[in-house]
Length: 274
Picture (cartoon, rainbow, N blue to C red):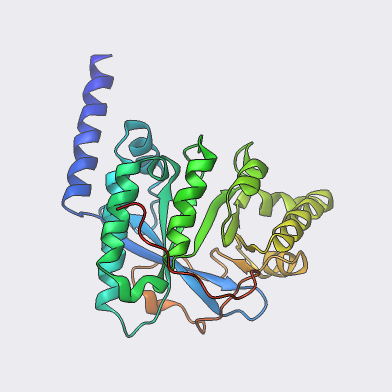
């Protein structure tokens, strides 16, 4: 027990130092239109110690359980905003992951809006993916946070859709722009025609709700074709590019706007989180 406590304490101290000093790297991975094969936007992925191939999932899950994920989510958003400001010629749209635990934290939400207000000119170039790795308990409060972000110009994606038992409840309660279908559903759809029908039904439901869809784990052309035939809008996976520190490494044209939602002007709302 003493050894376990010591290891946990050391890991927590390491993560806090990494967050405080921004000692992490940002890798990019494209989200691509399955219809036109153009890049819709990029997801910003955290990497530690320069290890591009190593997933940060364990470290992020640890931070959620330890209650320090909010600081990291804010640090990640700050790094991406700085990158966008420094690379204004890129015109890339970048998505930042935000934990369900962060969405439930009023202090984090206020700090995030304060940070975003410093970069008002590039609001349309940063979007947020709310992850389900930490279960969202108060859906009404979470939706208020999501609508606060959307009201000031940020698109919001519900990440990992289908990974948990509450997926349909989330879809019913959270008004988002995009849903990212978890990779397990993509794999199961390849294995069985019955599962493919389920995937197509999910895509159809989202389309009826005015929500665009993205599928994870698109590893080959057969998968991309199957997803397009199932009316999924976009794909993400090694077929279109592995995560890379260089955003210009992907040999695909950019900036196709994919949205199932009808285009309409957004009413600028006051910052209710400040």
